[in-house]
Image 1 (cartoon, rainbow, N blue to C red):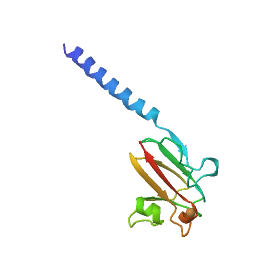
Image 2 (cartoon, rainbow, N blue to C red):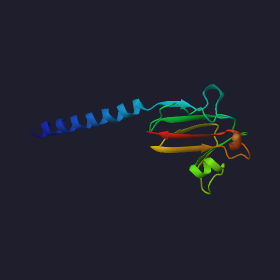
Image 3 (tube, rainbow, N blue to C red):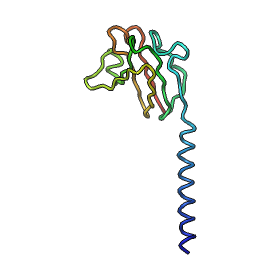
Image 4 (cartoon, rainbow, N blue to C red):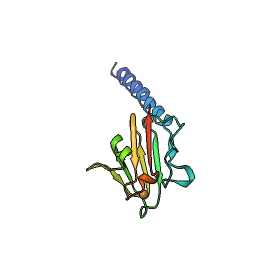
Amino acid sequence: MLEKKSIAICGITMVLGMLVLNNTANAATYKVGDATGWTFNVAGWENGKNFKADDVLVFNYKPEYHNVVVVDENGYCNCTAPFGAKVYHSGEDQIKLVKGQNYFICSFPGHCNKGLRIAIDAA
Ligand SMILES: [Cu+2]
């Protein structure tokens, strides 16, 4: 009797585990800017792509020249990084998209205004 119950619980865990795996398998990974990477005039690269929550963006760049800052809409539009904004600077950052709007800029002076920003709406 006890043994049967354990098997049933194990079965449920397996199904849940498979659902989680399946979800991960559906997440896509994107290299921002493709071969050019995270650099000037990357803005627009995101257009026409169907991003989903949990998709991963890979930002490749030289950390001496750029960084990646997670900002809000205002930060994106005005090229400003709000105080306390999350800054990535490894040169090979992997950032998972959240559902809804995701905004990223480079906060080096003038870079965002030279098209180093993207805005993504993840389903
Ligand atoms: Cu930059």
